[in-house]
Length: 277
Image 1 (cartoon, one colour):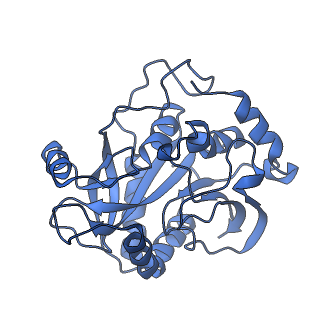
Image 2 (spheres, helix red, strand yellow; image 1 turned 60 degrees about the vertical axis):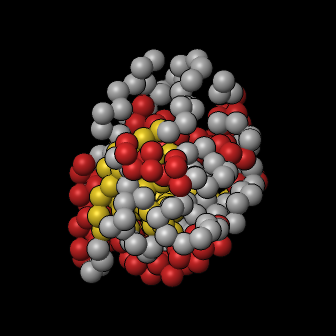
């Protein structure tokens, strides 16, 4: 059950300047993505530990800061790092960034993550635009009472990832000379990596990549009417595809090597956002 009082407390934790303008786009940046942003002017930088209900990030590779900044004459709200369901703190810290941005008036969202490659055509370092997802574990932040502002009791999820925003990501990559592909993301609860048998099962479902995030935030955002796109960096191949073992260190290192191209795509995405999507 979501405690909506936490949402109110979170908004009260934010400096008043945060609410003076509506950000033109929001970001939730996953493992290894916290260093991709270029800024013209920082307005607010706030550690998660100072936001009621969010709490400090406990996973390496996540900066754990909310940043409100200007870039290319646009106001952007970015959550650099995320909380995960597997941390055991409930749904509130996982989806709180979405709810904070919704209450700010954000209607456009970009979510990023690091993922394991299932499709053997993928290689570490490749960037994948998420076209759809599979929730493999059944847990869902919409279970419980209907939260005001999150849409209907049974929200349609036919087009979670906005085609126009995904096309903008593809154009941004082309302008940067980068290569991106599109794929289906399988969400697992974590914190364990998947077994080879599970990866074979997910491949049979049609999944191209796998990870422990993104889907909860995307589910809530789509239900609330926020248009979103998602971009994943394949940091390793999944269990049974290649390599003897999987490690978080491998994830962080591959993301670090990809930072220049990830940064260029994100910056081009901001620069080319239309006034209305």
